[in-house]
Length: 82
Image 1 (cartoon, rainbow, N blue to C red):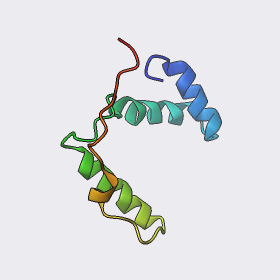
Image 2 (image 1 turned 60 degrees about the vertical axis):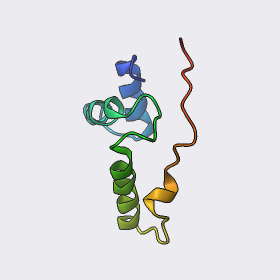
Image 3 (image 1 turned 90 degrees about the vertical axis):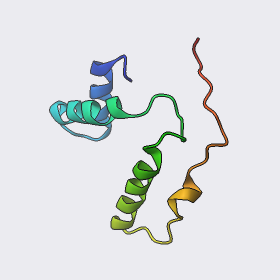
């Protein structure tokens, strides 16, 4: 997705039925800011997960587990390309 901006913007626009300009903003502000290594041990991960859980609560979900029960650092990402 990172290497194919135009294709990804079109995909976002098509999937979510939104104008390409909005999809481009989604690409720049979300896709390009995602972590690339899958490391759940990074310092910013607990706050990011907590924000997601808070948003889920605002959306009406109940009985959400604590953030420390969502994150696991037991698994280490393995690169798929050399």
